[in-house]
Amino acid sequence: MLEHGGNLRDAAREYGRPLADWIDLSTGINPHGYPVPASSASAWHRLPESNPALTAAACAYYHAPAMLPVAGTQAAIQALPRLRAPSCVVVAAPSYAEHAHHWGQHGHSLRHVPYAQLANAVDSCDVMVVCNPNNPTGAHIAPEVLLDWANRLAQRGGWLVVDEAFGDTQAQAGLGPHAGQPGLIVLRSVGKFFGLAGLRLGFVAAHPELLSKLADMLGPWTVSGPAQQVALAALTDARWQDAMRLRLRDEGERLRQLLASHGITSGGCALFQWWPEEDAEAFWRHMAQQGIWVRLFRHAAYGIRLGLPPNEDAWLQLEQALTTWKKL
Image (cartoon, rainbow, N blue to C red):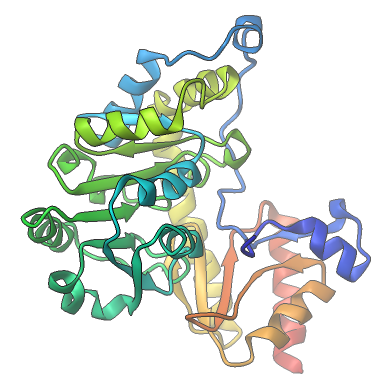
């Protein structure tokens, strides 16, 4: 199994600190999650058949013509490679590692291409997989550029898979409105922006024919009844969404400025900052010794990703840990 953020039990075991004493900045998940409403008894009792209201809410929120609810975008990431004959696949590097892992397991020819060089690879592959904004760096490709790539790939039966898991803070930058065209597949998650990673719910926007094939492969009852009810409330709560976007943009900038004040030049998005650093492992260990779990990347790119602290005490603890690091 690949390494991921959020593995606090590993941190607790390695450093001998109880789970409750950690500040987890390793995932980029919104620490101010959507206030989960109580689920009805029927959501727990009945088989979770698909709810058209949830699909309609997702289409409205993501501005997509058609969407399929899935048990987290991970379910789609694992299934999509099985829907194509062996193909030449380009995955951006660095990127969310699960994409390359699963395309590589199903007979496809896999090539890692640096994010900044993807434009040069469009015409030499059948499938291109891009995170936008990128995970872990936060780099962003303009929608019009991605649409051009999608059109060029589609002309020869190819796919552009765009993982927009961290895209909710830039509501107008998504490709959802264009996902009805053949060859463009957009993945969305309620785990990051809504802070509902434990819900295990995501959506796929694509041409209806492809969505039908994906649904057949995934089978029935893939999303639990409580997850459907919570997501329906979150996706239709425009007031919460608007306020949270403003809050996360402010806090994202606060994190960038805090790091800069300690000599760390970072980039990223509203939910996390990325710091390419040769001494990343030493920084990671130092922060762990202070009870702060950040994400260390050792492959494709070497560096640190830090998410947002959940409260003022955590902000202060982070600042103190950065101060002691600077003095080392």
